[in-house]
Image (cartoon, rainbow, N blue to C red; front, side):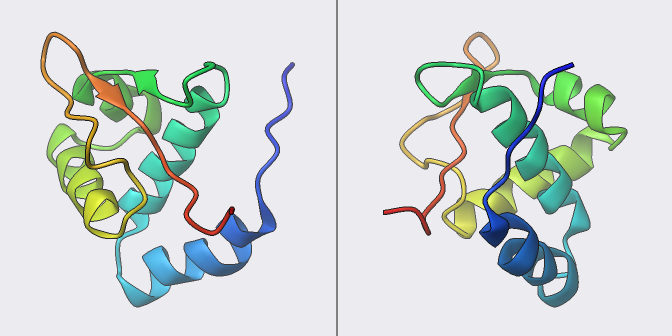
Length: 98
């Protein structure tokens, strides 16, 4: 079994901010999913479709779409990486890490 190491910021700051303040728990779940899978790649990005994210997180596809939109607005997903149907690349960012 692989271990997942999270920055304390994700739990201490990001979770209450996304779940409590923004009222977007799906965005937090999607962000955790993307962090987990992006850590396994060298580019820090993951090629995963909306349907796969929905299936793996237990969320609806529309909830995933809304969550991804919110994460981009919050600066937690790289806006220069544009996911398409044929190339569903998504890159989670860690803006608190300098």
